[in-house]
Length: 260
Picture 1 (tube, one colour):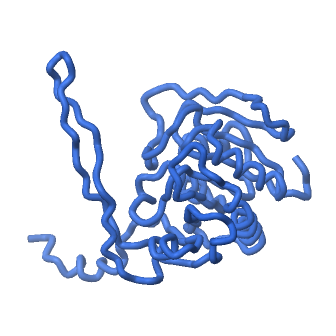
Picture 2 (tube, rainbow, N blue to C red):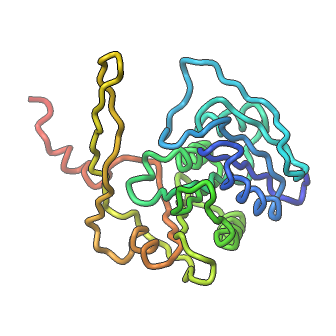
């Protein structure tokens, strides 16, 4: 590894061969020394799951791109990838961890289900500055080219300025050609949710099974949210904290008569 360049860990949740991570890798190679540790298969929607009741495999792989860097394919979750990267592969904290570019948005409530963002959060827990990148396009043929200049700008700013302890960045790109993206907007997470539905079916053996579906509901009319930014042609940039304590409720909770 170069002494002059930062060491960057690249991961994702769509799998090591996904087009999104290959695009992210191209940008990171312009900025620093790169090591890829990513799942060997898609892990979307895994959240912050870790593997505790099964074996983990992590194998060095050589893909067709000749980038002159090391890549490892891991049988575990995105959070597993970050853990095994720091403990068994790098043997030190990287200067930065980037996750993505995800095929599909991770704005609003999606951040808690996202394997992409959970990899970034895991890095943050371990004291590594981290960014999750996602594109509002679920297609495997998604065009990541318009994202690249913003990925580069945000990454270089994080390396220069750092991030507060306990904070990682959630970046989402609209599905637009480069010339129609208006820029980056710093946002808050929109107050939205999924209204789930289950499609119940019966298999030939008579056993019921279910497909999860539903619709995304955004009741947040604020113009300072990630959903508003994406709908209006901006890249959304949300600082995310992984301390889930509801600090504003502590004083009221202390007033409860809990000893009765």
